[in-house]
Image (cartoon, rainbow, N blue to C red; front, top):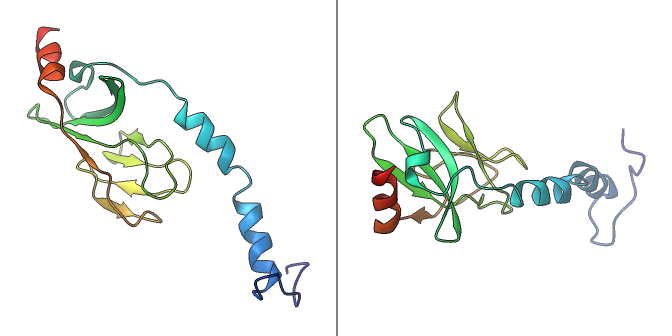
Length: 136
């Protein structure tokens, strides 16, 4: 039971609810910084294996790139639309997962599970990135 049971916060809500929120989110800044500062896993679409996903840095911008088994590449924003954490590739489920609050996205950025309420933004792979990937 909450030690603040029966007390009210400054918003008039039960204080227990606010205490639980603070306890659950005390480590968010640590994860946010750790994952936002994580280096990219490559700088070319050629760095993405068939059936896999990688966080790439293309023309100074991070993208989440997925290559399907037929070598078609889909790029989306690598930042979760819930709180902005950097997603990572879940090889077993073939999804983009947010390590901060558990949102999951499909290879094209659509939402599979929240708390995110909007999909990852589409990012078009540039012609320069395609040319570099074909030359490797």
